[in-house]
Length: 142
Image 1 (cartoon, rainbow, N blue to C red):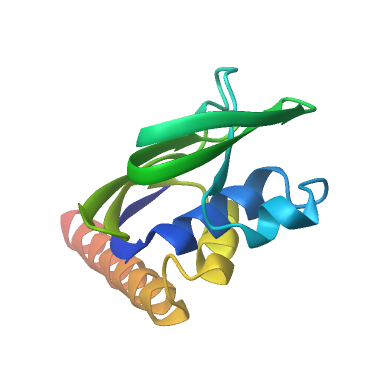
Image 2 (cartoon, rainbow, N blue to C red):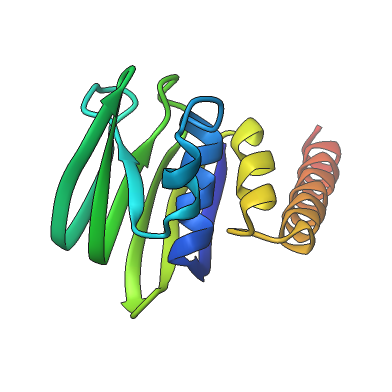
């Protein structure tokens, strides 16, 4: 599991949720509309959009598409339960993503622009350094 703590735009997080859940069947008009978000009620796999104004548009498969204005937050959890992320508004369409993500989720987070490849490389480098430190410590204690 990878701990995520990054700032990103609402649109980047919206793209991530779509890539992770409904990219193959979302209507083209919904994909192009920045105010349309997918939601899912089942748990694990809950996706919830908290907004000042929200209207249900259409249900397709297990996804309900909503038109949301002034989004305050989004809760996303994967069906596997390995990823749990929250996007919280900081200012207008800018926000902060926090939570735990699977390594598979990192691909979609990067592709959507939530995190950068540089962020992933820094994370991997930091983990490698921690691993090296663990090896050195265990060699000294054995």
